[in-house]
Length: 582
Image (tube, rainbow, N blue to C red; front, side, top):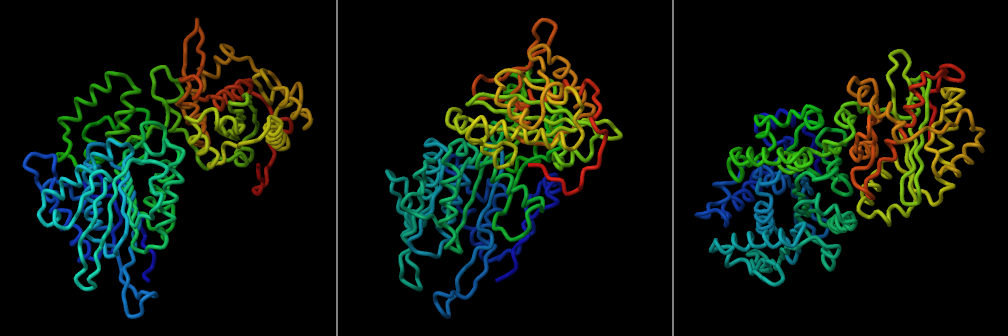
């Protein structure tokens, strides 16, 4: 077999600017590819007056996806049938991120029909999964209308309306075997793949499906069933999430970006097709994506299914409703990823947060690079988070470096189901630890405090700052590590955190505070609400119950101690390069 395909597309930014499909250059079997494109082009678009064909109204970008899906094949000796050839699909997965109104549902229906027409195996099952019953019904209606509008397809396919199933009645001329291949169009459900292993699957709007805690299992089942079929094909077509990406959507998107950017080595079968702006455009506090001149880069079906004349007034209306609605609109129509809460009453440091990430920062690096450090801790109950923040003052330029760690009990995942998937993401990233008891939580936090103490960077007094509420177990754990008053100090809460609440945004704006780019911190910053009470600002949660700001509160506690301009107990010492932190 040929060497693995390199599916990285390092020049994707330039391709988007030129209006090209942002995919790698691929070795295409032109015969297979153009047969598939020919089928696609002949399908009618049933909900456009006059019923034009896909060839007349569809963008070239989707034909490029068709070519990649059905044209990157090779024919090899079939070990099960000596003297026979078998087809191997070199690209077995396609992940498409494209904004709304770019014909995702219509294209999904057309793609399902093309997959049936290109299929060579009898008795296979294919499936299109919509995020809701309404979307699934629309997709099925589109597919049926495409079939009914074509005399040949009407003879070839049988539609079973009540089962939302399309059956291929074609008989192979060489073998005399009836295809009997089935395409089922369903709404998302944990039982969606029960009883069959799909040879091809098309998932529409993965970001909506990801809100279900069953989503990872369903996709795992689909992939697991496809392992034995060298011709299997999985296509995911989705818009960006309306909230901070989480769960299986976040995981799949990060893999797709990693492949596109060359960070994941060749060897996989996923082709990423991502219509999105670079992170410096998406996350910039000045929101350069508001410039309408940039929009065509991420709208491949522009002037077909969507026009700027319709988008602009729609955007202006969303903008008038406030930052939250503007952010939601941008996530759906421009694929702007929501990383932070964008409410007017959000913490003023939020707008600068993304620009101050230093992803390579670890606690070990912080301890090596800094001359002094302080620790802030915010403790939580059984259904809350407990968080620890370390702020170090870097040698030379005095920039503050920030790293955090959080803990939760299993009860958080059961009592706060609306954020369980997101919390699991933070667990997978290593920034949140699920522990069984409060004692375990306290012991792990105390261990990190002891490691910072051993580095020599904590001051003799006021090195560890706590919210004094509910910290008995933590105090005991710190005492067991020989850390107590005056090293451990209570930090006043509420209006007493005014210095941290007001000063940290200025440090972020000036890049005098850099953080490790941890997802849990970005989430906490986005959850924070800033309120003016009297002459002081307070920070509270945007939404009661589900929103968590404990990591940010721990940062405020650490900052209050760093404002004291501390000096390390032993001065600045050298931390070995192999120093590890749990």
